[in-house]
Image 1 (cartoon, helix red, strand yellow):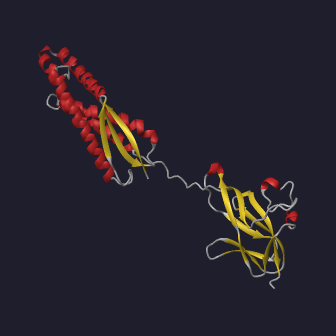
Image 2 (cartoon, rainbow, N blue to C red):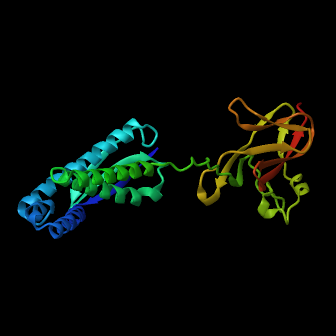
Image 3 (cartoon, rainbow, N blue to C red):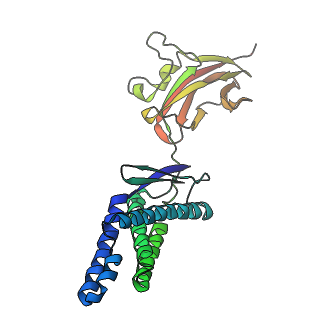
Length: 287
């Protein structure tokens, strides 16, 4: 199972961050030594056309580098992503949207963290690349920061604990066969809704008739909470040995006549005492 998450790299935010960082160093260098004015001019990623062109080239190359890292990590690591580890992206309105197909156990609480660290990674990589020809020390500093960003990105791919399977148990049993319509004031079935006014003994006046040695199918449907289909956890019990609950060759519950007599048959849920249905059976001699 997998799901798709989206992280967004904002182009202008990255460009402004690079300009701000490089501008501060240039100001400091000019203040320390006026002879560095020309060098400081080139240190700062200003608004000049050729600076903008270089910055754009650097930014998009680092976004692509980030995408290739995602592909390598998510497909090579195994387990952090679904079998079909796709990485896709679109560029709209000054942003690059990167779509990652991850395991459905990926912790959604880290989606925003992942997006922010990805944004910072692109910015720190761009500053590193910008200063590489000018200042090896500062270039190395931002390369180290980019590596830290990448470590944080990797840490985001943590999984939540596997969910225990959820079983839906029945909330109601409706018997469809045997067909036992009400006869006068005697009902064919007892359900939890009518136990206050009907006793099991009343069912003896309206039994299902089977012969000794015969088998009669029991057909029923189950209703689950909020209409969700439940599992079949139904058990059938007879309160008298004149008949015996059993399965036919298809695994369907049946009643088999053993000897003459009357019995109350109860269908009930193993997981809820308030989910049941009762009817009576009369076993007649097999002539």
